[in-house]
Image 1: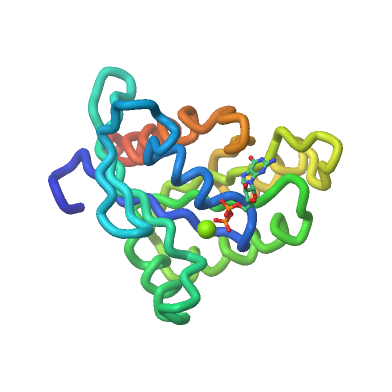
Image 2: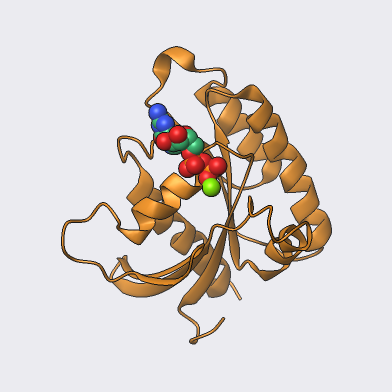
Length: 178
Ligand code: GDP
Ligand code: MG
């Protein structure tokens, strides 16, 4: 990573419309009133330092998966550069959930033998009446993926802070076991 051992590049991947940019915007703190430790490094790259379990960690968050302008190479790039991944689907969109499995397979293929920290993220948990994917299905999928699972709502900012803290913990677990 760019600035030492406590700096992690985290990549958002998932179907268009599932809420990746909404999660990134919350991370970036665009909804915070005055404060903002966040540095916007480019239109789809954000950097922020968090305190997690009494230790600071800098996340560089990449939200460029849907960048059509740059073409297909950007997806290959995304698959290569992450220290950790957030695979996002919408709980209101079964197709996006199925897409998540495809992405897990692609990631495994792109980064063979690497034990990459991943969180499977079921976003839009506020839309209870439109739910198409149950919590149990999300959890079961994460077991198959061999990763963590969380449901979030970018709209009501539920579990978003926990998501970013969670990915830092996942990276550290692997670091500390080396
Ligand atoms: P992306 O294509 O994955 O970056 O998705 P966006 O962040 O652009 O979100 C797509 C749409 O879903 C937008 O209209 C968002 O306002 C909406 N959206 C994103 N997250 C949530 C959520 O947690 N709950 C609800 N109700 N809507 C959301
Ligand atoms: Mg987006």
